[in-house]
Length: 67
Image (cartoon, rainbow, N blue to C red; front, side, top):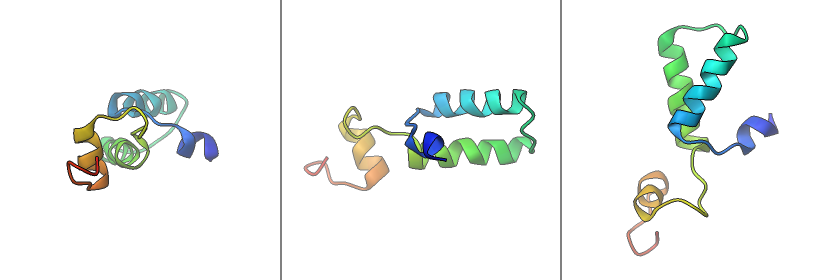
């Protein structure tokens, strides 16, 4: 579990991870897989040390000054 929650991928990275899991027998509808990618991208998709100001504002709800 910590491997997945510790990973910080972009949406493309999470899509590639899910695609790899599907190739290894993960089952679910296209809609379910899209939800997984969206959730992981939103909650585990940003490294705050390398994120841009707009990314910080959007993802964390920060003001321009805070970001």
